Length: 323
Image 1 (cartoon, one colour):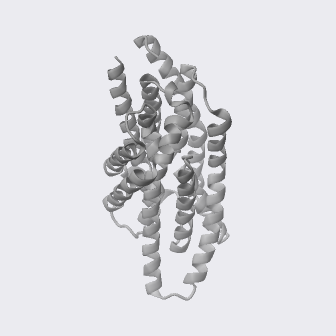
Image 2 (cartoon, rainbow, N blue to C red):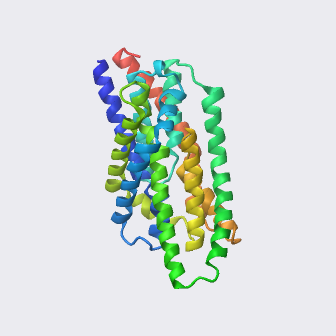
Image 3 (cartoon, rainbow, N blue to C red):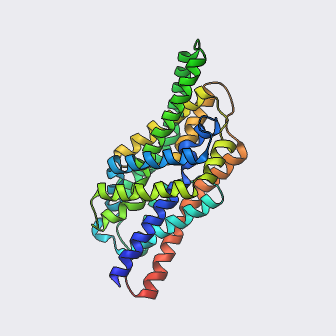
């Protein structure tokens, strides 16, 4: 039975990684696609796949450790609990992707771990890891907005007297910023899906990150277009200067969080960066209806993930007679 649960947990984690990859195409390449720098969705998804694997392999280890052993102790992690955590997070992420609602998979993953941990009766590190995660999540859009504002102002100054060649360079700069965002996605979000592999001592952090990066890349290539279209064409309305400022604000903020081991929301960082870039021009740059859908999903889906994870663990534990 334990071996069956281990395989179920691995499948659930890989499923979650696949949904993460498909969900974040808009948050990484949406600006380049929406502005016309990238013409075809498949090109955007191929770039995401390549840079996600790099970020996941070389810089996801801190987040892998946080999700695997930082919210609850590694010795309290069980195959059944880990399977319920990942399966819940994957289902909720897939549902949001289906409805084209960007959501924080980092918050989903962490609340799924909390839900199953409560079902298991395992001690949770509320005063340390959970507190620092909440500080990170609150600070993410604020820091991204500040950076988006500053970087847009700087870009305006640099590009003020530039020719058409300068505009072409700016397009390449936006593309580079989006590739950096995809790299950051691998570093920041891979651990959400494969951290439990490390928590159960199935593999080392780097190997777990590489495997997670592969399935995220597959997710971007197979189901990434809907969210790419939603974010690229339906939410943000930016010129190239603002796009560079907003994208770098998002990526720098999320990369900092990942390097500290506290996974944050790429979508919330994006919204903060866009708001800051717009504020630098005194403009309203967000589609309010689309933004309202996102804000609702931010609050509802983590709560839903925690409740579903708790109930799923209790149900499976009762039916299978294991903990």
